[in-house]
Image (cartoon, rainbow, N blue to C red; front, side, top):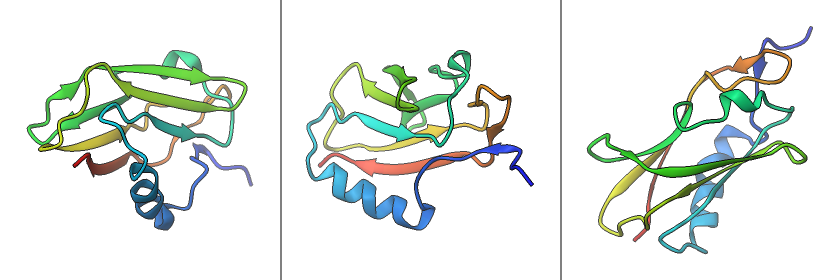
Length: 114
């Protein structure tokens, strides 16, 4: 039976470990790359459905790019991240596949640059 939901290609238990490893190569303009297991509806890849917030829940202006050939979304801040703040990457359930399936659960990953 096919899933009614979109899935990200990563083991959720490994997600925090992978994030910590990737962030070791950081600059203050760290680019998130999120790979999906199926092509996405490009209309749902936007700053409303994917965004980064600071610890005050303010949205950080970011550039969102979708690479359809690799089913990858890149989220890059327009300004460098502060080394004194904690941030959260938010991927909402409104991200949709070309087939009309939504992400099953929202994703929130906390990170800090310094």
